[in-house]
Each structure stands twice: as structure tokens, then as C-alpha cells.
Length: 302
Image (cartoon, rainbow, N blue to C red; front, side, top):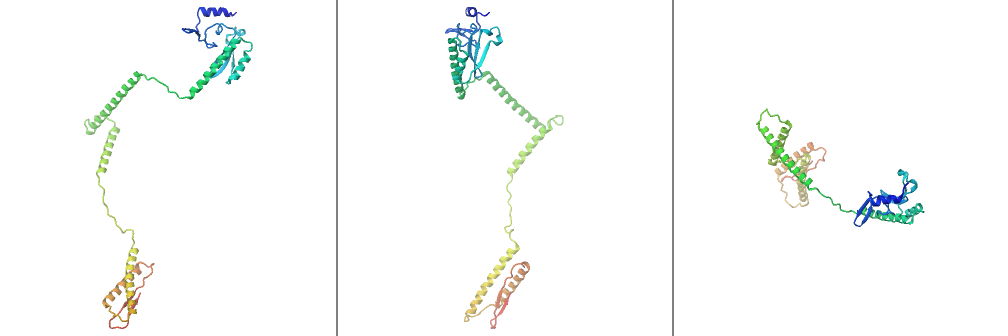
């Protein structure tokens, strides 16, 4: 049989592992304590009929203990889940604790109120961004700095040794007795060749070239220029002849030899034009030759 008064006398005056004595009073560390204070009405061990509220991952549960289940420790507490709505949770508490002591019901409701307020504050703090202060161990930082310095020195030493060995191998100091990887040696030679080639390119001067200016012109275009010159000169002569016809009183003096030369040049040019450019239209040339003693004019039309 369980006797609550005997249990309380043993716990209160002898020893309790959940009791915490401080200057302000005695507190209880038992998770089922409804108030957190160590006294007769709030002790979950010394009360056969007890109720409290606990939080499991943000969900509130109503725990109830009765004397009928005292002989079954694995089924000692009855648990009821409470909704997130505060008013509905109070209704469920009133429903399950209808005939329980009024003081215990009041303490359970007070615990629900405090836990609800605490959950609201936690939710607001989670939304805010807060700075997190972290400590950096000095010994670890110093150790890492020393390791970095040693690694840098070792890397420089290895590079200098490798460079010196490659230079000696290139000069042939060791001859054939020294077995060194051929790929490293070839890599060094390639680097030297690239450096020399780059210097030669920088030293080279730009070359000067001369290019023809009339590559695009064809022979037919040149012949067109020649034909235009001939036509222009004869047209000018034709205009002069027309003037001589209109003015009968002016003296007529034309050089016979000059007329012959022009006639011969015009005939030769026309023969070349006919042989070279058959597709083009033939130019018509009117040449007039006058003699001093003759009254008639000799005309040649081509």
C-alpha cells in the first residue's frame, strides 16, 4: 500500500535526489512537478492523485496519475494531447479534471499559460537574426600558423633543390650515372625554348612590302580610256570643221602631213579595238583632209 504522508516525511527530512536547496528556497528538478517548488502539495512522488503538463517538441500534453494505477509503474501516467489553441486546451483540462482538487486544477492552468507564453517568445526570437559569439582557441590558431610557416619554407627549399639539380643535369655534371626522371628534364628544356622564342619574336622588326596599285583593272578598261581620248580629239576637230563650213570668208589652212599622221594613227587604233574588244560597239571616226590647191575635200569615215 502507498501512503503519501510517510513518503513525504522520508523525502522532506531525510533525502531526495530531485531537491535543490538554494538561498531563496528549495526547488524540485523532477520533470513532472507542476510548480517547480519543493512542497507537500506540489511533490509528484508524495501525491497519489496528481496532474501536470509537459512539452514534447512544441506539443503540450496533460499528464494524470491516479491511485488505481499505482501498482503498474509502466502505466502510471495517463497522457492527453492538448491543441495549440489556448481556449480549447483549457476546455480539455476542465473536462478531464472535473472532480479534482481546485488548487491542483488552478496550478495546471497556470502552467499551461506560462508554457504558452514561452512558446510565443521562442517563435519571435527564432524569426530575429542574432549575432552568435564564438570563441577561438589561441593554442589551435598558433599551432596552425606554425604549420603554415613550416610548409612554406619546405616548399621553397624543395623548389630550390629541384632547380639546382636540373641545372647540374643540364650542364652534364653527373654524366650518365645520375638517374633523374626524363620528363622533368624535358619540361625544363621546353620552358627554355619557349622563353627564347618569345624573345626572338620581340626582337623581329616588321617587314616592308610593295604592292601593285592597278591589279584590279583589266585590259579592256585601259582600252576604254584610250578610245575615249581618241574620240574626244576627233570630236574637237569635227567642231572646227563645222565652223569652217559656216564661215566661208575665213582662210582655210590645214597641214597636209599632220592630217595624214592623224589618219594613220586613227586607223591603227581602230584595228586594235576591233581585234581586242569585239563585243563593244565600234567607234565611228570622221577625218577630213583638205589640200591648198584643191577645191574638193577628201573625207574618210570609219
